Length: 489
Image (cartoon, rainbow, N blue to C red):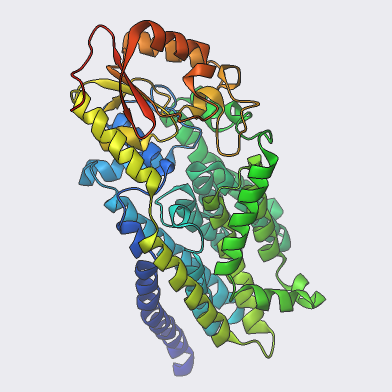
């Protein structure tokens, strides 16, 4: 009787001791691997876009109306909340939240691995995930962007489904989707786990309700029609496969090679495990998770590096399963190899130059010098961070030329222009410029297919109402002809 009473207490103590030892290690690793994220004010245009969105929302903007993006609302709201608490002049609070997101993902993966393959597997999974998590171009891996904040939700969805908590799993899938649409791909392994447990009849309604409630809530908190348009129906052209095939293929191969290099300690045990049919069939939910993440990477044929972050959690768990279920696997070698690869990528993040950031900073300084704080400006380009760096309000809700021309990475100009814009964007753009004529327009196209010379509306506006006043690193500044600012010093 006494032994039966003491058994739960011993189990609790064992569980507490396990996490007491593992959590400090994972915390140190999460912080160490993301040190480079704190050495730059900004890593990529996604961060810039989110920062500008957050400032506009804080000043009364309405998401999917006066503030628009093709992404769901969760991350813009997170940026807005961080700015409200800590000020909008720095992304450091978001960098800290990104560290916490990576740490939470590692903890959830460790818990999954421990449940399936034992205590040592939990440690291996958490450590391997964090070591590989920075294995891309630093502007993709170190940014506080969409994919980093997708990952804890996707891991939580699988964690909940693995324990039969279907309502919570649905909520986690919804949160991943509301961070970025491709986060919803984790629904596939969740549905497999639901089927494998034979819980479809009882679990599916809870899963559906858990998913639907947050999504409907987000739609109602914004604008339902705008939410559907900007997150689902209005992005068909962006998600299309047109563009430069060679450019797209080159990016896909380059980012695949980078992740493969970072995963040098993971891929050999996975490859060895694949030789046995029993290993392939052992954890189908893991292979489905990897496959659904690969589909998420490939959707739209853009293959940006940060898309590849979704592959890392299932890769880490697959390697862990191989290392802890097959005899003769060399776990220390896998960890040491991953440590060496991680050190190289962290060093790259600390040392890599950022020429586009330097250009945006110079252009922002010129805009700030030639305008007053209350002036509206238009930056015609693909670097919305210029508005944030300059501290100036955009003259339009469309923060990049991409929304008005369908330009994005890989487009070769064949489907770039006014005709390929987000439906209805140009009439709104013309009305906004008429109502809030920008004091300064910066043409930052620098020879790209969206240059004003190829866009009749913008070309006519510049010719009739604006005068060239300066050039900054190839960007051309135009002032209103009726209110020309002083010449640059």
